[in-house]
Image (cartoon, rainbow, N blue to C red; front, side, top):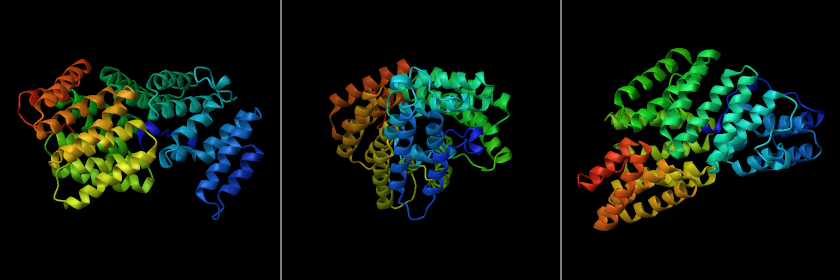
Length: 406
């Protein structure tokens, strides 16, 4: 599942202790005749009622065990209800102020609530608050001697830094997660950390570092986990690495396998991202099928609830349109992607969108706008240390090609 929307925490192997109300609701929610929407509405109302009555432990149990379904994170990862989830989570904080501590009696419960609040804040583009709360969630895990869940939160913190373009901070958070995985012995925690460091290495043109990181991640997946492949964001980034290094057929195969896995899990955002990735990997798939993937990915991203995911999928649609010599369509998609990126401080995505805009303007013969966007992309990439985008923008300025970065 998407690392930014997942908490495969140790306590999820068993449901939290339920109140009598929680137990009755769990029995009712399993009824085959209850429609999904009605079930979710009922459980949301029950969570609000329990919190309003001051029974925050019961409210947390309903939220965790039934609305999230533990590690599935069903309310967010499957249904894309980030706004609803955040509003529910705010009920646990005094005055709905997330800078305060959640009002539950169990330290693990408080940690989980802070972690999931940070996930929702990230998805909704509140990156500064997401960063602060993720640090607190990681510290709360360490206080109770839980390096596994601290590592998970550091994965998500790395994702937030990555989205904002703070690549050095992303790398530092991934390295911390890797160190914590050594303390917990959880090899999947190490795998995710390696794919994060590999992706940063790709973005900064450290090809040797990227290769070593992905080799380490693959070795863990094949030898030490129950799923012998890289999936979710890890699989997406590995496919990009293969694309960057010219292994097109393998990149497409990895992406297709990832698509099947994410569909089986019901991870909406991940499915949208993988579909969009398949449109920018050269293949012999018939054009109308690739167009369908592009359209489906955008439709799914609009329903998935994450600002960053929508921006990334729109960017892929712009890249696909550029590759198909449809600059007008590329301008529309890239402009929307850049508007979202600028609104929520997604600097890396803004850089990529400007590169796409530069390519589309150049294809239309509008060299004034093309050079303006390429200059802005180059300067922004230089400030972020985003070497790959910097070099592509520089090549555009030199007239050496119009290929947008993936």
